[in-house]
Length: 448
Image 1: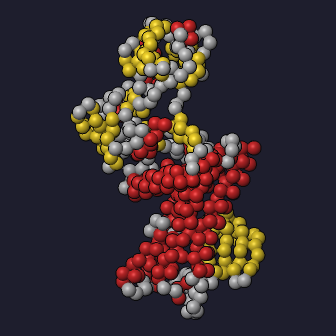
Image 2 (image 1 turned 135 degrees about the horizontal axis):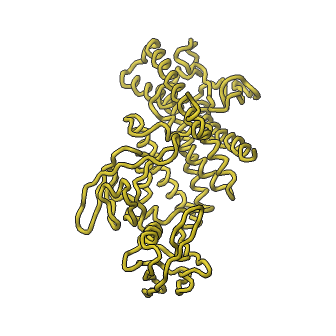
Image 3 (image 1 turned 60 degrees about the horizontal axis):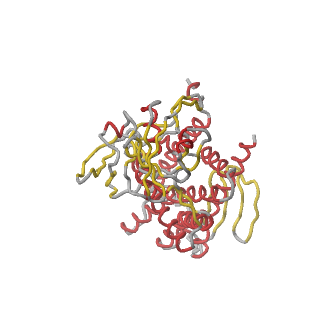
């Protein structure tokens, strides 16, 4: 029950701020150009509460899944008086600025939020920013079937040259069951390959995986008492180089090697203070979470970068991250249009509520603010899609009318808006359905 309340309250706060900022962008631009604003609403439908100041009714409405600013003469299908304070009475360039101001505010909010987060707490896995060198390949995985080997470096993936590991992971994640062209460097040779990410996740929470792991520096962060590693002389911060002469480029490589080796003694080479040392030990079989495996008794944590960035560095990093995720969102939309990605990968209000609740229960404010930045960015990009009713559709029609040097007829606009409305409703229904399937995994099996 507590988690449910966290989710509901967190979603209300997150979406409320996103919508408020978005609609304020339209409102501020309209006021600047002298357009009369009749209604500023958070939510749709029946008015629950509000107040009137000047010519504007500020209100909260019953359906909190959006919001709107109603400007005088905005709807081209309604009769207009031609008054100078009506939306359609203003030049197209001013209407363009008013339309784009909402998404622009969401994008600016995302940049501002991430900048603030990075100034307080910047944390990310170190390998995210490193060249994409393969540290381990799972047997019989998509990567193994494509001929990818440990030590290969990915120099191009899906059109992106010299990708970092973050670039690679994001590309793979949004491409389940879709072939991806890659180029790898092996020694002095560049080899062209194609991998087809396997579908991971349950029913309505899908993502792609190819079964490779990044090359990482593997350092001992914890030792288990009375286990072979301690008895042999392994120390904290020792960096594992190889086992029986086989280079260990990732934690998964070590785990896999030990399971294949069984109870036979191993020679573990480590780096300590610039020197290479060798220790011989025999793995012991242990049971953990119902699964048996061979262990040496040391734990290895993923190296992380943790810092407080200065404002210039935080701002620059925020710009870079927002740019990266904007391009990823556009790429995902492009794949959806081409049926190369599943709409099941999209989250709706229930998914946002669940993520908001999880972020709100984590220590500190930075997880929730980071999530808000991501949602705000996505909201800004989605609203720029060239679909009538959305801001991007208004912008597209204004551009077309500017090129034609005349207004599109009301009859054509009416058909366009009717079709767009049906499309938006259908998408909304599908997204809500996906949300329900993710929230109630057994529901799909119970449906006829």
